[in-house]
Image 1 (cartoon, rainbow, N blue to C red):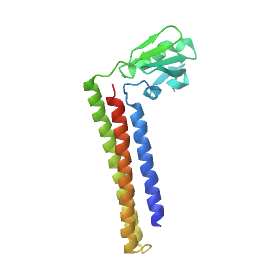
Image 2: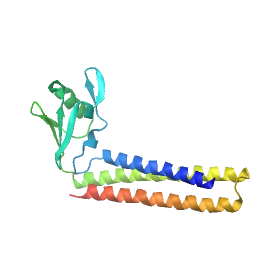
Image 3: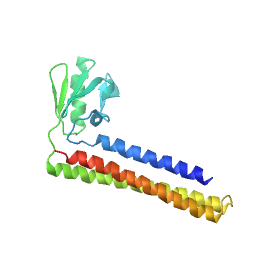
Image 4: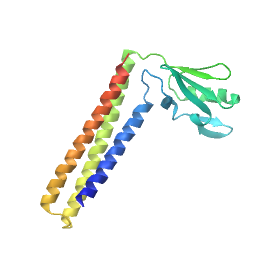
Length: 185
């Protein structure tokens, strides 16, 4: 029974870390990444569609993203959507292809991004701790219902704490990796 609670808790914590990684992918670093454009929706003949469903996205160079719309008439709405997304990117088109050049980040901007990354990491740690609290509450409920002994409860609480500590350490690793990527010139 305690193993079920702990494995469920661990999978929830894994999802929290995955969510953090996805959040980090959206953060603009010095390198171009198509994931910067994941949240952008384009008016495609009256329907809001994700950018990757109306154009082919590519990263030909470290600081350039190219978009090749499947329909040339879509270039103006795509440019408008990118401008409205407030990413600090200005689209340039040649009639067939839209280029987004990512300007190099200033030191000040890099530090702001790192602060943002640390906030995301702290939010993830809080989520992990909340999951830990819920797991411990579930274990105490099992003990109250006499489904596990007090000794089992203490052992399980220690296991829960160990799993929590390992997930917090993984969050720190993810943060450190992304921080290095952002501070890289």
